[in-house]
Image (tube, rainbow, N blue to C red; front, side):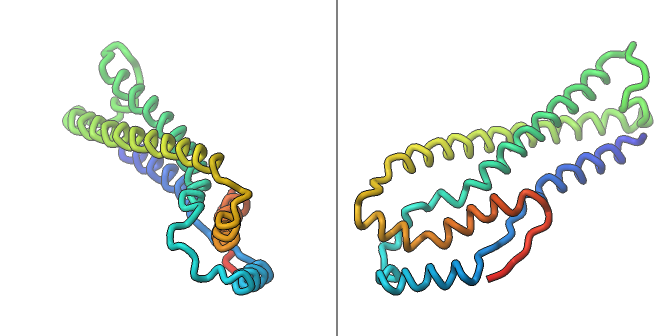
Length: 179
């Protein structure tokens, strides 16, 4: 099996994993009407521009980050295995043996470059995970009995419900959009 074919297959797999996390939208007409009525009734429309739950929309993103981190870890092992097999001359039937000798060095360099890009991305994803932990601390600190917090929370409910719906309904590639 040529190295290019394997690379393309791996990229298609990665693309499929990322597509499953693509956002879809669902807010029912009934929910929208109820929320709009509450917002008008409580005059929530002209609230403070600083949302109470700004980072809460990242809930689905966190699940995507975990999935992608796990996927990238598998890639790290695959890349390491390919490179280690290439270093062992007594190894029989390696992936890179299927590539002409004249192209092997170039492919190894490209594989190392992919590996470096992937490691950079993994570090970035770790940072995203750390930010999620900070969001969790902030959520636990919200004063739920404070009237202003309650007003802001009601004002933002539709968006939060949207984010929760994404998590609940977009676990598969079949998502619908309706309002």
